[in-house]
Length: 437
Image 1 (cartoon, rainbow, N blue to C red):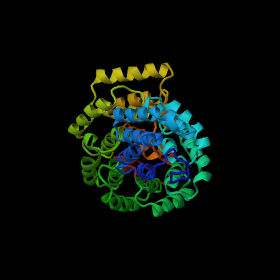
Image 2: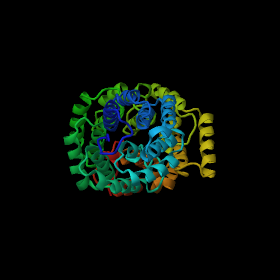
Image 3: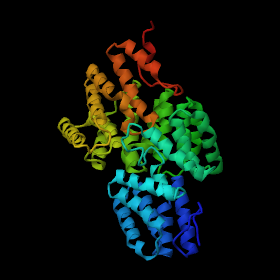
Image 4: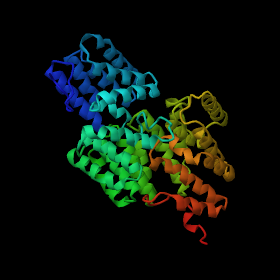
């Protein structure tokens, strides 16, 4: 019987289909372009190979081609009755629920699937990172949930390059840096051209205050990564963030224009939403002038991609754009829609994102007391927003800026004293002039 790279049996007797499927899986797990084409070759070699259709669906979904992805998962469903295994049926169900707009149900199905087929890396990858099913769940304990999920899988993967890149990330996010370092180093040594490992190392450098190492690594790594790679724009954002923190704003803005400025961002739709507004907002906190044209371009872009709220990770970044460039009536309508979802129990992050959205608006109006009150009302639950600690730092920086702007210096000091150890450089203008006791 033919097997995949992780030793799991495949429901195909075609070596050509097996080889193309394994190639597609590795490309997908490395976040490189070409996975959908490899899965298509597998399905052409064996049209009844359900996992090949499902793999193509996942690759297309990551690329933002949702209509084609749904056609591909429909093709997978269509051949399940012929020669599919229980694993095939379960795998297809997980991706089918995801593409059906049911992430919570997809996560339930995935947890069941992972118990029986823990080494089905393509399936479990749906919940292995910050943009996965656990990362966007809105849970107040999602970071620990993420680590627990991967810890459950760890005995099944050992020293595997794909698994280590994700496990190291989850460990680093919760401050387990000594445990994370050897895993990420091993992952990159085994498979240097793994974009997710590069992403994990970028976060590791951030959490450990290693700006010079981050700059050197990202410049070198991005030089050989295809621009249409799913993480090219996001890794460019990481480099731009380092340069901003180090006072090199012009270099950061150049990376913005070349790598992650909304429409030009080559990554998945979700990543397109958060990198550009996050960078522009942070740049202003650091004291750089507002670029109205860039904000206006972002406003049209995010509204086209996400016309209605529902996904907290995207919504809080859209709230930044609305606070700066949004139409007040349009923004209020979106907030009302969000409030209705919260009241009906249909919004996974509860009140957190709506409260932050109103705080961002107050901050823009220079009503700093109201901004502070809004942020502080949900600050302890900010994990529910979705995103890495590096991304969520934007909320802490905004709160710090508001404290400084209205002269609440003692509260600014307390916020700084509570900040987790490691990350270096707080890009907030005026911090250097904070009066000492």
